Length: 272
Image (cartoon, rainbow, N blue to C red):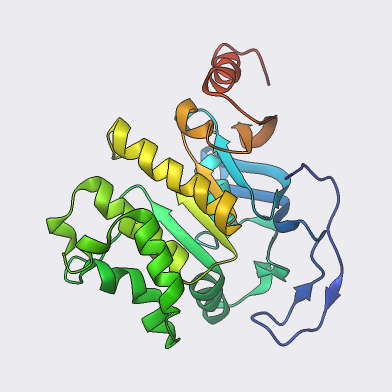
């Protein structure tokens, strides 16, 4: 299971991979970690601390949900972990690579080869078919498509009969399934999902969350998901709760009722 940590992980060691600074993974079961992560916006009276010295680990082959009130820092944490934003201080380690010192080219390679993304807005290319959207990261990398794995993902998501359709010809749920397939087809080390069901109705939401759960249980995928929905968080192995830029609580084996109870406690000022 993912767990909170209080001290830096590992020591630098040379390696010929994505980064010039590669560190020993914190433990065999840990695939990602934040160490003393802070993110500050603005200066002077306009200073906003979005993340305040956050240290946390994420376990391999687990689904972790991140929750918190608006402005708590949950999306900022995910964006920094996913190399979509740079922290003001601290370190991020993904699959043994300390990404804090990577240049733009290294970050681009990291995102392409090791990370998968599922966003609330789908982010599909409108002029491409569903199949072309799914294989886009592999095509850009000039890599060879693993056809059996592609078939497994497509059939598991139930979108084979939609592969020739463009996004405008797909429902919201179908578009999000295509986005999930795109995230999985390159076998990333970790998938980051930002409110993946935010634009979907309850039925489509349950289908997408069910697939994310299956991808962890059956395929061994690692997923970090930001959500505001207790029902979505109930699909996770663990829930992290943020408030004022800090991790203030966590919950293993969550249910929607238990998550809602914790969230109400924050809203009522029951936790600091």
